Image 1: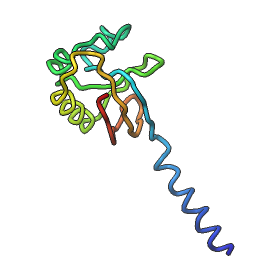
Image 2: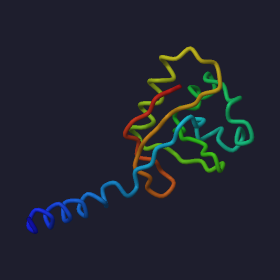
Image 3: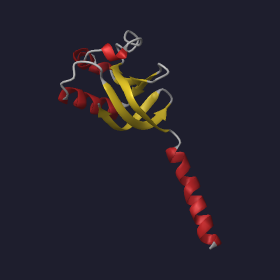
Image 4: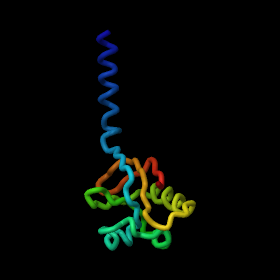
Length: 113
């Protein structure tokens, strides 16, 4: 029995570093990097057309404490696809999960709301 308990304890400790940086953000504004400072006061007013026009600068979210977290390349690809498929004009918000590495979010899942 002690061997099983030790095994599961060790297994749990090994899994912790993999989950350490995983963050989930719900219903947060998504904006392109070029416009992130300009629209920081009211990111919901940022239009989809502008976001797509500035897509090459990359995207990110504005957190509740007004911090801009940029997406990795995969996250940028996913949000561009979602924006192109959407007919929303503004109020661009997402639920996003990823591994936070400094000020970059390595996106594992994203959903345009």
